[in-house]
Length: 223
Image 1: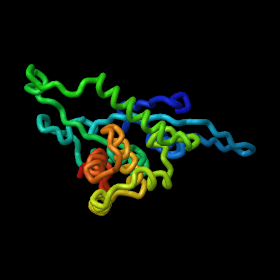
Image 2: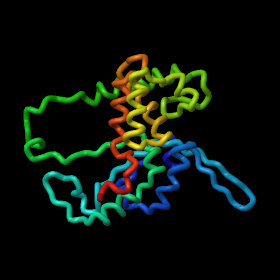
Image 3: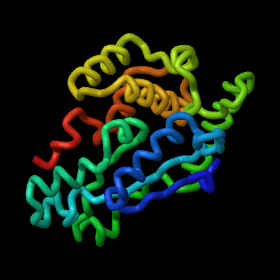
Image 4: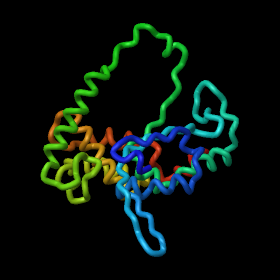
């Protein structure tokens, strides 16, 4: 993990890793460092990285697929998903389920062009510049992901409608306090990408939508 410091750590087939190994990720994702303690000494290594991971919805890969029948039992699906603990899932800011494309969608020639990579890159650079200016007086803080609790209240406080929406989502989806801060950080980034100033309810709604795996019933989703 330390080799990914200031870079990207990509884990393909996340649920195929040993659960104990995955749990080790919790400290660097939270504290951006790794602490190793032995009998006579303690050593800290910097470990600030962006975690990107992918996984199938079940062992056979077809759970929820509208085109293929899943052959896994409910117990198999539950055990498979439970390899990703709630505390680890809490620390993943953006979680998205992706449905497979049909043949017609893949082969369609007249699909409207989406936003190009160059324009996306430009928006990302602009957002990073905005954050660099915002946090220039804060030592060790360079982007929204590194905000402290106090900074979240200062820079990512939503309007009344957004706060009400977030309160409702917290109660309905059984989200944790950590998920609350992660949603606000993502919402602040959405605002920066849009070139806006304040966090509003539409930004909160989008950020909540990016946590569609983060539910209180995560381990039971296959039942």
